Image (cartoon, rainbow, N blue to C red; front, side, top):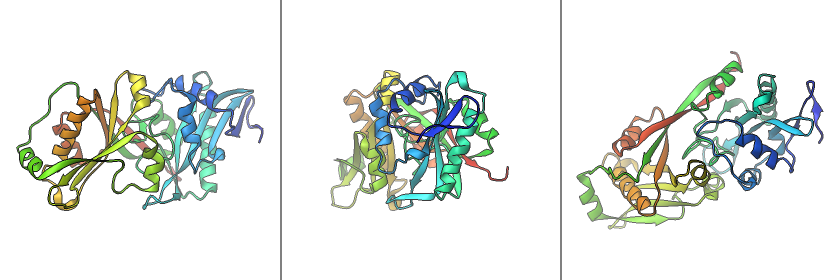
Length: 326
C-alpha cells in the first residue's frame, strides 16, 4: 500500500518490511529520556514485528518523500486470563516525531490515525502508554523492569497527550538499587525462614501465561522461589530478567525484578524480604551492578518493602486515558 497524501509534504502509511533501520534511527535520535534504550541493532525491533499479534496497520508511518519522520504504534493487551488479546481496550504504545519536524501537527495526526485504527478494531477505551498487561510491544526498549506508561523524564510526553484530550489514569514508580554497594538490611526472621526453606530456581513463574511468554519469555529470565522443606507450595517467588538493551545504554549490568508474589496466607511474615535479599546477594556474586523494579504508585506495602531493601526512586511513569468528552 503506497503513501496517501494528507497534508503538503507529509504522507502517512502502514509499516513496510523495509522500515526497521529507519525506525531505529528515528528512535535513537528522538530524545526519549534516560528510560529509553538507544543504539541497538535492528534485531531488537524485529522482536516487536515478529510478535504473533503484530498488525502492520497499527504501526503508522509519517514520511516526507522517502524519509521516515515519525511513527505511532497502537495495539492491544491481554485479557484477564492472559490467554488472548483483549480488543475492548486499546493502547498507543509509542509516538515519535523527528526533532526537526515537530510542531507541524504530525504527532497529532499520527495519534488520530492510531485512535481510528484501535476503534475500528473494537476498542471502547484508549490508553496512551504501556503498563500491566496492556504492554504489547516495547518492554525492554522503554521504561524499566516493567512498562510504566510514559516516563516523567520524557518531558515532552505529558503536554503532548494532555493537549490531545488525555488525562492521567495510572502512575508507576521506578526504583533502582546499586547492589555493588553492600548495604543489605538484616531481618531477624531470616534465620528461621532459612532453617525451614531452601532457595529454588525455575525457568518461569508458576503462573506464566501465553501473554507472559510472548513478552517476558523472549528475554533471558529466571524465577527464584522459597521452597518449604515440608513439601508445601512456595510461599513467595520473584522473576529476574536481564535488561540487556538498557545495560548497553547505561554501561551497567542491570537486572529487572518482576512478578513478585507472596501467597495471601503468608503475607507479613518476612518471606518476600528474605527472598529478595538472597536474590540480590546471588546477583551481586554474578557481577550484576544494578537492580530495578516498577511499582504502582498506590501499592504502599510493596513500596515500603523495596525501600526497606535500600531501593531508591529514580523516575515515574504515567499512563494516560483518552477522555472522549474533554
